[in-house]
Amino acid sequence: MKTIIVKNYDEMSKVGADIFAQIILDKPNGVIGLATGSTPIGLYKKLIEKCTNGEISFKGIHTVNLDEYMGLPSSHEQSYAFFMRDNLFNHIDIDINNTNIENGVAPDAQAECERYNKVLDELRPDIQLLGIGSNGHIAFNEPGTPFDSVTHVVELTESTIKDNSRLFDSIDEVPTHAFTMGIKNIMNAKKILILASGANKAKAVYRLLKEKITEDLPASILNTHADCTLICDEAAASLINNI
Ligand code: PGA
Image (cartoon, rainbow, N blue to C red; front, top):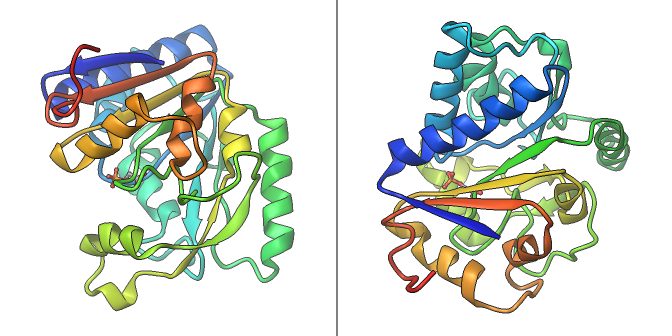
């Protein structure tokens, strides 16, 4: 894994956006894998700027997203579909029909997982963006998820529900289940970019770089990917030395 340590969140977002922009320039009809959460918002702002300036265009780009809460329709403000429109898609020249995410209110969850796996087979990302959970999860693949998992429904752990509750009016409103790409789907991306910012990610970053590869730390599998870059700011890198 290539590790880039930058000063702060803004630097992380800038360096990450430059990597994405280059891929979009190299392959204007490519596939980009996107993520939700607090971490990528700055990167998305920089991509919006680049698109507004005419530096890049998303006209031919397809997107796939990692995960979606079960039970929230795409119109719900806390759904990840809403997040993506609000933080990126509504501000760039992408064709919304070329954006893909699990349907949180699909009537048949198993059929929805199968549908999404087919989408992912057809649209292999040229780059997949990831955050990392404080417990080392990637997407909603919590500790213990098999490395060969594909899209599935998960029951969220207490730690993830707590992490995400800041975005809801109360912790009781946080959905308890979600659809998520599996780890095998994520590893299928040609390139992976992980972002980590802030002291609350320092332990996860330390474990990612220093601990053995184990399903107890889902992100650890990324160490075996042929083209994976971690960008973390100084606060997130604070527990690692000599890297
Ligand atoms: P965050 O979430 O960007 O909101 O910290 C990252 C994750 O849980 O994957």
